[in-house]
Length: 172
Image (cartoon, rainbow, N blue to C red; front, side, top):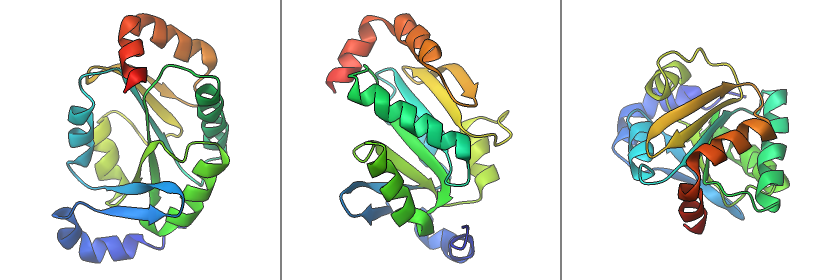
């Protein structure tokens, strides 16, 4: 599964200066998460409430959460979602197929391109790597961090906290 790690280990310095995206058929290109990119992504979305969901191909509960996100989107839930796979760019085809299966092919999606521990620490220095891991964010500030599969009640509670800001986020 993690066969691309050696490639990244060897070419990390070369990749870190590039804006890398991995094309995956009819799916939004996967962006490669390198050190510093999580902070940049957070800053880019800092004007609106949004959700960041970490997941992996090796995580059976993550499939339930991806199904949940797909269902929420089909039902018209007001949310801006960013998905981050803790897998590698070498898994892009499988990641793309899974996102398409759940109706998430147009969601902004990242894939790890550096050692997982380093990228997890950048996201949350207290996070030990359990998956799925979801961050409910209001204008760049984490409101809630959920380990395990998020449920409709947790999402609804966050949406109620965000109130009218969610309407403007959904319009983007």
